[in-house]
Image (cartoon, rainbow, N blue to C red; front, side, top):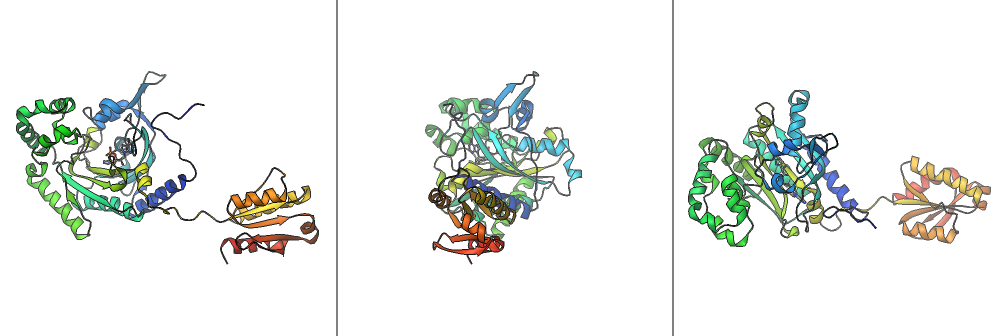
Length: 418
Ligand code: HAM
């Protein structure tokens, strides 16, 4: 047997219904909020992420599935959607081609991480991005969409955490203060943090090593170093959230593991997940579009991990499966009539099955039961001769002969519970 690759997984019946629920709610909600869907390739040029996600991030340094293809080109299985969405936005001049630059996408991402509950090497994201809109109400609207997604999925016990990391002008001041406060203590931190102190000091806030935490907790807070414009923007975002009754907590540690963020950052944490507790995360990235060769347009968005949403879904969230009909036949002639009936039921919009192996009527009824059929239509020599069908309501086990011409209509009545 050849097993699936470590960190990847099959989504089987029983679970796939939950995925369908999550995907359906995501599509509906994005549409309601004015987003249009875009589907980008799984494969991109490696440089898109080196430049977009950032050279100093864990993703680019340790986690990318990159290889040289047969034509000698360096390509990468996308580890996140944001750089791809920016590329598509720039490449197709979507700001002119579309009436509004609010885009969303869903699909698989790849990161070579250590697999555990809620963390995989192939996982799926709903990704939402807004380009060229600077108003703090847009930040709040994006957060509201994320919040409403979880509410609509009835995922309870969630917490919204927010922060502001400033922009290109106030960030260096914060970074300098951070390094100064760290001083000689940097030598007491883990190897990764010592490297981060040189390459990208903000990443130190992401550290999970227990021994490092007291030192990191005492470091300065980005919100204390914001310029007036960034501080005003962040205050307005919080005011909008308050006005809409969306509860939030300020988290100084929320600098996020990607390089492109400016101003607002946010995550929604869920209790169901244990250590991997971020259901979704995102923020503003005002320099990224320009950095990737596009016009000087701001950006903001978030991505939700679909595996994590599925894990956090409450019991019974998927609803009842579609009611089914079953056609049972006795004899070859009846079989031809049964196949015709089966097709008629499906053409009329009903879910219907039949047994093709020529088994006994008893075996066919057993199968109808296993499939959870609500109605069974039985056709044998008798029925054929009389132009009838025997229709059985599987719940009450009542059955009666009905005219062939009425069979489809009466089956529908049973499936619809009348
Ligand atoms: P991220 O925080 O790296 O952000 O990922 C977003 C979400 O994807 C996480 O909160 C988590 O639910 C899910 N996720 C990440 N890695 C894994 C994994 N290995 N296994 C399962 N789920 C995972 C981004 O990707 C940004 N592109 C978000 C964004 C969009 N920012 C602005 N626009």
